[in-house]
Image (cartoon, rainbow, N blue to C red; front, side, top):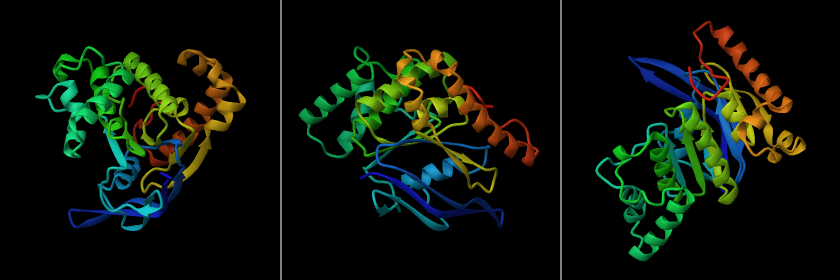
Amino acid sequence: MSDIVFDSVTRVFERDGRDFLTLDNVSFTVNDREFVAIVGPSGCGKTTCLRMAAGLEVPTSGRVGVGGTPVSEPGPDRAVVFQQFALFPWKTVYENIDFGLRSKGANAASRRERITRQVDLMGLHGYESAYPHQLSGGMQQRVAIARSYVLDPDVLLMDEPFGALDAQTRIVMQEELIRLSQKNPRTVLFITHAVEEAVYLADRVVVMTRRPGTVREVIDVKAIRAAERWDRFERSEELMDQASFVHLRTRIWRLLRSEHEADGEGALISTGGGTT
C-alpha cells in the first residue's frame, strides 16, 4: 500500500524571530493509486504539504505517513517533480534519466532496459542524445517525469509541474499524464493553482483555506467522472465544455473566491490552465 496520510498536521515557520503558522490541523488521505490535487490561495501551504510528504520538511505537530510509515526523510518510494525541470544541463536526455538508477547502483543492462521503456513511454525516442537546451519546455518536463518514473516509485509528488509551460503544451502534458496514470498507476499528490487542471486530472480535489491553511472541502471528481462517462470524450476541450465539468470547476472556484474575498488580497487563483 502507498497511501499518503496527513493527520492533524500543523506547521510553524520562524522568520525574523517571529512564528508564522502556515498549516493548521490539516487532515486528509490520498488512497493507494489515487490521484489527488490540492488547490488553494497562494501561501496556504500547498507546497509545504508536498514537501512534508517528500520528507523534505517535518510537521511541527501531527503526522504525515506514507504506506503506514511516518515520513521523516526522503526515500526511494517517493519521487518529486517540480515546476522547474531541474535537469542537469551538461547531461543528455539518456544520462538525466539514468542518474537516479546509477546512484542506486543498478547494473547496466537493467538500467538500459528501464530507460528504454521510459523513453518509449514518454515519446522521447530519438532524443536520447539531446541536451536540455536543445529541447522545448514540454520535452524537458517529459524527461523530468521519465527520470522519476524510471525509479519505479510508489508515490509521485508533483509541485505545479506544468506551471512554466505555455497553454498548448500544458494541455498536451496533462493528456500525457492521464495516459501515464492509466498505463502505470501511481499514488499521486499534485499541487496546482489552476482549478480546471485539478478537475481534469484528479480523482479528488482538496480545497484549502487561506493561510493558515487547513482543509475546507474535499471534492469527489471520480464519482462524477464515472457517472457522466467522461472517458467517452477523446479531446480535453470536449470534456471541459460539458455541464458536469463546468459545474465542478465553478463549485471549486466559488470556494476559492470566498477565501480570496475574505483575505482581501490580489488575484491568487486561476480557473484555467495558467496561474495568476
